[in-house]
Structure formats: structure tokens, C-alpha cells
Amino acid sequence: MVMKIFVWRHSKLYSSWSMFDEPHICRRNYMQAEAVVVAGTQEEALALLEQDDTWNIEELRRLEPIVYSVEKPSVVTKIVFSG
Image 1 (tube, helix red, strand yellow):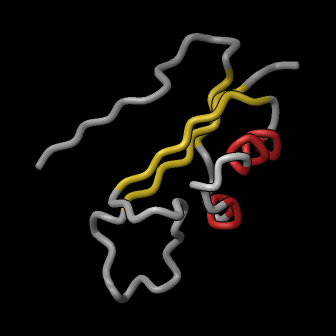
Image 2 (cartoon, rainbow, N blue to C red):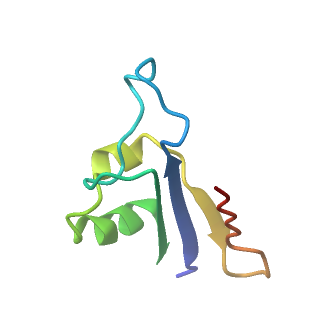
């Protein structure tokens, strides 16, 4: 089975009361949340995350993850936080 890297990222940095339908992917309070999972399928990745009660799976389903194949070289993630 070809494995892939699934990345779900969500930021509430610029959220406001006008964004009532915004997803809340983590059960804890957060400004930025990211889940990165190696799995064969998106459903398998979500099942792995579901084992940890931290993640709200139904909310994650609302977001399209970034998907990387591990068959070729690629940059998986770059994060810059500035305050």
C-alpha cells in the first residue's frame, strides 16, 4: 500500500463572531492547530486521529487536507510564527 501524508491545518487567528460556521478541529482551546498523519487513505488517517480524543473528527471532515505522496521528494511542511 502506498502511504501518504495527510495534513489538516486550521487557524483562528483572524476569526470573528461573523464566522459562526468556522470549523473547530481541536477539542481544546487553540489559535492554530495542525494534525499530520501518515496513512494509506484519508479515512484511515481520520480513524488514527479518532483514537486521540483531542481531535473533532466531524469538523476535520469539513476541511480538505493537504495530501503528500511519499513516492517522490517534497517539502512536507513549513511553519513561520511571528508575533
